[in-house]
Image (tube, rainbow, N blue to C red; front, side):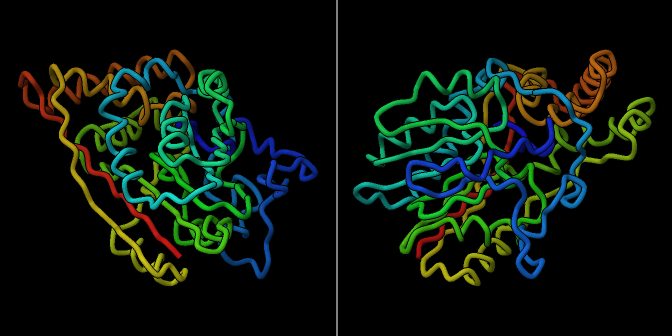
Length: 309
Protein backbone atom coordinates (compact mmCIF):
# COMPACT_ATOMS: atom_id res chain seq x y z
CA UNK A 1 0.00 0.00 0.00
CA UNK A 2 1.15 3.52 -0.63
CA UNK A 3 2.97 5.36 2.09
CA UNK A 4 0.81 7.96 3.83
CA UNK A 5 0.97 11.16 1.80
CA UNK A 6 2.66 12.96 4.68
CA UNK A 7 5.70 10.75 4.12
CA UNK A 8 5.93 11.55 0.45
CA UNK A 9 5.13 14.83 -1.19
CA UNK A 10 3.70 16.63 1.82
CA UNK A 11 0.08 16.51 2.82
CA UNK A 12 -1.50 17.68 -0.43
CA UNK A 13 -4.78 17.56 1.49
CA UNK A 14 -7.93 17.98 -0.53
CA UNK A 15 -9.91 21.20 -0.32
CA UNK A 16 -12.32 20.86 2.62
CA UNK A 17 -15.10 21.97 0.29
CA UNK A 18 -14.66 18.76 -1.67
CA UNK A 19 -17.19 16.28 -0.36
CA UNK A 20 -17.75 12.60 -0.82
CA UNK A 21 -20.97 11.24 -2.21
CA UNK A 22 -22.15 10.82 1.36
CA UNK A 23 -21.55 14.51 2.08
CA UNK A 24 -18.59 14.18 4.47
CA UNK A 25 -15.14 15.69 4.14
CA UNK A 26 -12.58 12.90 3.90
CA UNK A 27 -9.41 14.98 4.15
CA UNK A 28 -9.32 18.31 5.96
CA UNK A 29 -6.37 20.63 5.25
CA UNK A 30 -5.00 19.67 8.67
CA UNK A 31 -6.42 17.27 11.24
CA UNK A 32 -8.43 19.15 13.87
CA UNK A 33 -7.00 19.59 17.35
CA UNK A 34 -9.86 19.67 19.87
CA UNK A 35 -8.13 19.59 23.23
CA UNK A 36 -4.92 18.48 21.50
CA UNK A 37 -5.70 14.82 22.16
CA UNK A 38 -5.80 11.89 19.78
CA UNK A 39 -4.47 12.07 16.24
CA UNK A 40 -6.18 15.44 15.86
CA UNK A 41 -3.03 16.75 17.49
CA UNK A 42 -1.19 15.99 14.24
CA UNK A 43 -0.58 19.35 12.57
CA UNK A 44 2.51 18.71 10.48
CA UNK A 45 4.78 15.86 9.31
CA UNK A 46 7.26 16.65 12.08
CA UNK A 47 4.50 16.41 14.69
CA UNK A 48 3.94 12.75 13.90
CA UNK A 49 7.60 11.86 13.61
CA UNK A 50 7.66 11.30 9.86
CA UNK A 51 10.26 12.63 7.48
CA UNK A 52 8.91 15.18 5.00
CA UNK A 53 12.02 14.91 2.83
CA UNK A 54 10.75 11.89 0.94
CA UNK A 55 9.90 13.32 -2.45
CA UNK A 56 9.12 10.37 -4.69
CA UNK A 57 6.51 7.68 -5.07
CA UNK A 58 8.63 4.70 -4.12
CA UNK A 59 5.91 2.15 -4.83
CA UNK A 60 5.99 -0.26 -7.76
CA UNK A 61 2.68 -2.06 -8.36
CA UNK A 62 4.45 -4.76 -10.39
CA UNK A 63 6.94 -5.48 -7.60
CA UNK A 64 4.19 -5.45 -4.99
CA UNK A 65 2.09 -7.91 -6.98
CA UNK A 66 4.91 -10.45 -7.46
CA UNK A 67 3.54 -12.27 -4.43
CA UNK A 68 -0.09 -11.34 -4.95
CA UNK A 69 -1.52 -14.67 -3.79
CA UNK A 70 0.50 -14.65 -0.58
CA UNK A 71 -0.38 -11.03 0.17
CA UNK A 72 -4.07 -11.61 -0.54
CA UNK A 73 -4.72 -14.31 2.06
CA UNK A 74 -4.42 -12.04 5.13
CA UNK A 75 -6.89 -9.62 3.54
CA UNK A 76 -9.37 -12.43 2.95
CA UNK A 77 -8.93 -13.60 6.53
CA UNK A 78 -9.60 -10.04 7.66
CA UNK A 79 -12.67 -9.73 5.46
CA UNK A 80 -14.03 -12.94 6.98
CA UNK A 81 -14.20 -11.15 10.35
CA UNK A 82 -16.54 -8.50 8.94
CA UNK A 83 -20.31 -8.92 9.22
CA UNK A 84 -21.91 -7.84 5.97
CA UNK A 85 -25.17 -5.90 5.98
CA UNK A 86 -27.25 -4.50 3.12
CA UNK A 87 -26.15 -1.21 1.58
CA UNK A 88 -22.87 -0.80 3.43
CA UNK A 89 -20.70 2.28 2.95
CA UNK A 90 -17.02 1.26 3.13
CA UNK A 91 -13.68 3.07 3.27
CA UNK A 92 -10.53 1.08 2.44
CA UNK A 93 -7.47 2.92 3.76
CA UNK A 94 -4.32 2.08 1.80
CA UNK A 95 -6.08 0.34 -1.07
CA UNK A 96 -2.96 -0.21 -3.21
CA UNK A 97 -3.64 -1.46 -6.75
CA UNK A 98 -7.31 -1.96 -5.92
CA UNK A 99 -7.97 -5.61 -6.67
CA UNK A 100 -8.68 -6.50 -3.05
CA UNK A 101 -10.80 -3.39 -2.57
CA UNK A 102 -12.90 -4.47 -5.54
CA UNK A 103 -13.13 -7.98 -4.11
CA UNK A 104 -14.37 -6.61 -0.79
CA UNK A 105 -16.90 -4.36 -2.55
CA UNK A 106 -18.37 -7.38 -4.34
CA UNK A 107 -18.23 -9.74 -1.35
CA UNK A 108 -19.96 -7.25 0.94
CA UNK A 109 -22.41 -6.14 -1.76
CA UNK A 110 -21.63 -2.63 -0.59
CA UNK A 111 -23.57 0.38 -1.78
CA UNK A 112 -20.42 2.51 -1.87
CA UNK A 113 -16.74 1.67 -1.39
CA UNK A 114 -14.00 4.30 -1.48
CA UNK A 115 -10.42 3.09 -1.83
CA UNK A 116 -7.84 5.60 -0.60
CA UNK A 117 -4.11 5.59 -1.28
CA UNK A 118 -1.29 8.12 -1.57
CA UNK A 119 0.57 6.40 -4.42
CA UNK A 120 -0.31 7.59 -7.92
CA UNK A 121 1.32 4.46 -9.35
CA UNK A 122 -0.98 2.25 -7.29
CA UNK A 123 -4.04 4.36 -8.07
CA UNK A 124 -3.31 4.21 -11.80
CA UNK A 125 -3.84 0.44 -11.51
CA UNK A 126 -6.88 0.80 -9.28
CA UNK A 127 -8.95 3.39 -11.14
CA UNK A 128 -9.89 1.15 -14.10
CA UNK A 129 -11.67 -1.08 -11.57
CA UNK A 130 -14.00 1.73 -10.49
CA UNK A 131 -17.73 1.65 -11.14
CA UNK A 132 -20.98 0.33 -9.66
CA UNK A 133 -20.39 2.19 -6.40
CA UNK A 134 -16.61 1.58 -6.25
CA UNK A 135 -14.24 4.55 -6.51
CA UNK A 136 -10.63 5.41 -5.72
CA UNK A 137 -9.20 8.62 -4.32
CA UNK A 138 -5.73 9.98 -3.63
CA UNK A 139 -5.38 10.91 0.02
CA UNK A 140 -3.30 10.92 3.15
CA UNK A 141 -4.68 8.19 5.37
CA UNK A 142 -3.02 9.89 8.35
CA UNK A 143 -5.45 12.77 7.79
CA UNK A 144 -8.53 10.68 7.03
CA UNK A 145 -11.56 12.38 8.52
CA UNK A 146 -14.53 10.67 6.91
CA UNK A 147 -17.90 10.20 8.56
CA UNK A 148 -20.84 7.81 8.51
CA UNK A 149 -19.05 4.74 7.18
CA UNK A 150 -20.44 1.32 8.03
CA UNK A 151 -16.95 -0.17 7.71
CA UNK A 152 -13.45 1.26 7.83
CA UNK A 153 -11.03 -1.41 6.67
CA UNK A 154 -7.27 -1.24 6.25
CA UNK A 155 -5.02 -4.03 5.08
CA UNK A 156 -1.22 -3.74 5.52
CA UNK A 157 -1.19 0.07 5.64
CA UNK A 158 -1.55 1.44 9.16
CA UNK A 159 1.87 0.12 10.21
CA UNK A 160 3.36 3.06 8.28
CA UNK A 161 1.72 5.44 10.78
CA UNK A 162 2.74 6.16 14.38
CA UNK A 163 0.66 6.45 17.55
CA UNK A 164 -1.99 3.82 16.91
CA UNK A 165 -3.51 4.49 20.32
CA UNK A 166 -4.29 7.98 18.97
CA UNK A 167 -5.02 7.03 15.38
CA UNK A 168 -7.68 4.40 16.09
CA UNK A 169 -10.03 6.76 17.98
CA UNK A 170 -10.16 9.02 14.93
CA UNK A 171 -10.85 6.11 12.60
CA UNK A 172 -13.57 4.92 14.97
CA UNK A 173 -15.10 8.41 14.82
CA UNK A 174 -15.60 7.86 11.08
CA UNK A 175 -18.11 5.08 11.75
CA UNK A 176 -21.88 5.31 11.62
CA UNK A 177 -23.86 3.82 14.54
CA UNK A 178 -23.33 0.06 14.49
CA UNK A 179 -20.23 0.44 12.32
CA UNK A 180 -17.21 -1.84 12.18
CA UNK A 181 -13.45 -1.37 11.96
CA UNK A 182 -11.21 -4.09 10.53
CA UNK A 183 -7.42 -3.81 10.35
CA UNK A 184 -4.50 -6.03 9.39
CA UNK A 185 -0.95 -4.90 10.18
CA UNK A 186 2.32 -6.76 9.55
CA UNK A 187 4.28 -7.53 12.72
CA UNK A 188 7.46 -9.08 11.31
CA UNK A 189 9.76 -6.50 12.88
CA UNK A 190 12.09 -9.07 14.47
CA UNK A 191 12.53 -11.38 11.47
CA UNK A 192 15.98 -11.15 9.85
CA UNK A 193 14.34 -9.79 6.69
CA UNK A 194 13.29 -6.68 8.65
CA UNK A 195 15.99 -6.49 11.31
CA UNK A 196 18.83 -6.56 8.77
CA UNK A 197 17.30 -3.69 6.78
CA UNK A 198 17.35 -1.52 9.91
CA UNK A 199 20.91 -2.56 10.70
CA UNK A 200 22.14 -1.76 7.20
CA UNK A 201 20.54 1.66 7.56
CA UNK A 202 22.84 2.23 10.54
CA UNK A 203 25.95 1.58 8.43
CA UNK A 204 27.94 4.26 6.64
CA UNK A 205 27.24 5.91 4.17
CA UNK A 206 23.53 5.21 4.61
CA UNK A 207 23.38 6.48 8.19
CA UNK A 208 24.71 9.88 7.15
CA UNK A 209 22.42 10.12 4.12
CA UNK A 210 19.38 9.30 6.27
CA UNK A 211 20.17 12.23 8.56
CA UNK A 212 19.32 10.40 11.77
CA UNK A 213 16.10 8.76 10.50
CA UNK A 214 15.51 5.25 11.79
CA UNK A 215 12.58 3.05 10.89
CA UNK A 216 10.23 3.04 13.89
CA UNK A 217 8.18 0.18 15.23
CA UNK A 218 4.63 1.48 15.03
CA UNK A 219 2.69 -1.76 15.54
CA UNK A 220 1.43 -2.43 19.05
CA UNK A 221 1.07 -5.72 20.91
CA UNK A 222 -2.17 -7.63 20.11
CA UNK A 223 -3.49 -7.19 23.64
CA UNK A 224 -3.03 -3.42 23.34
CA UNK A 225 -5.33 -3.37 20.32
CA UNK A 226 -7.90 -5.32 22.33
CA UNK A 227 -7.70 -2.72 25.11
CA UNK A 228 -8.08 0.17 22.67
CA UNK A 229 -11.13 -1.40 21.02
CA UNK A 230 -12.70 -1.93 24.44
CA UNK A 231 -12.12 1.68 25.47
CA UNK A 232 -13.59 2.89 22.19
CA UNK A 233 -16.84 1.14 22.99
CA UNK A 234 -16.76 -1.79 20.58
CA UNK A 235 -19.12 -4.33 22.08
CA UNK A 236 -17.63 -7.19 20.10
CA UNK A 237 -14.04 -7.65 19.02
CA UNK A 238 -11.63 -10.19 17.64
CA UNK A 239 -7.88 -9.73 17.82
CA UNK A 240 -5.72 -12.38 16.20
CA UNK A 241 -1.97 -12.92 15.91
CA UNK A 242 -1.26 -15.17 12.94
CA UNK A 243 1.95 -16.48 11.45
CA UNK A 244 1.70 -16.99 7.69
CA UNK A 245 4.16 -19.41 6.15
CA UNK A 246 5.25 -18.79 2.56
CA UNK A 247 7.16 -21.36 0.55
CA UNK A 248 9.52 -19.32 -1.60
CA UNK A 249 11.79 -20.82 -4.25
CA UNK A 250 14.85 -19.89 -2.18
CA UNK A 251 16.14 -17.39 0.36
CA UNK A 252 16.97 -14.92 -2.42
CA UNK A 253 13.22 -14.44 -2.99
CA UNK A 254 12.90 -12.82 0.43
CA UNK A 255 14.67 -9.82 -1.10
CA UNK A 256 12.10 -9.67 -3.89
CA UNK A 257 9.34 -9.80 -1.30
CA UNK A 258 10.63 -6.90 0.78
CA UNK A 259 11.48 -4.83 -2.31
CA UNK A 260 7.73 -4.57 -2.83
CA UNK A 261 7.03 -3.12 0.61
CA UNK A 262 9.57 -2.78 3.44
CA UNK A 263 12.52 -1.39 1.47
CA UNK A 264 10.40 1.45 0.09
CA UNK A 265 11.10 3.29 3.33
CA UNK A 266 14.78 3.50 2.35
CA UNK A 267 14.14 3.84 -1.38
CA UNK A 268 12.21 7.03 -0.77
CA UNK A 269 14.91 8.53 1.42
CA UNK A 270 18.13 7.62 -0.42
CA UNK A 271 19.41 8.76 -3.78
CA UNK A 272 19.02 6.14 -6.54
CA UNK A 273 22.73 5.25 -6.44
CA UNK A 274 22.79 4.94 -2.68
CA UNK A 275 19.65 2.81 -2.71
CA UNK A 276 21.29 0.40 -5.18
CA UNK A 277 24.24 0.12 -2.77
CA UNK A 278 21.85 -0.29 0.16
CA UNK A 279 20.05 -3.18 -1.55
CA UNK A 280 23.32 -4.89 -2.44
CA UNK A 281 24.59 -4.64 1.13
CA UNK A 282 21.22 -5.86 2.41
CA UNK A 283 21.36 -8.79 -0.01
CA UNK A 284 24.82 -9.81 1.23
CA UNK A 285 23.80 -9.78 4.86
CA UNK A 286 20.41 -11.40 4.29
CA UNK A 287 21.82 -14.34 2.32
CA UNK A 288 24.42 -14.90 5.03
CA UNK A 289 21.75 -14.90 7.75
CA UNK A 290 19.14 -17.21 6.16
CA UNK A 291 19.53 -20.97 5.65
CA UNK A 292 20.14 -22.09 2.07
CA UNK A 293 16.98 -24.16 1.71
CA UNK A 294 14.80 -24.86 -1.31
CA UNK A 295 12.03 -24.11 -0.89
CA UNK A 296 12.72 -21.47 1.74
CA UNK A 297 9.95 -21.24 4.35
CA UNK A 298 9.41 -17.55 5.03
CA UNK A 299 7.41 -16.89 8.20
CA UNK A 300 5.47 -13.66 8.48
CA UNK A 301 3.63 -12.45 11.59
CA UNK A 302 0.50 -10.37 11.20
CA UNK A 303 -2.07 -8.92 13.58
CA UNK A 304 -5.72 -8.86 12.50
CA UNK A 305 -8.43 -7.17 14.51
CA UNK A 306 -12.07 -6.28 14.06
CA UNK A 307 -14.40 -4.29 16.31
CA UNK A 308 -18.20 -4.06 16.05
CA UNK A 309 -20.42 -1.53 17.76
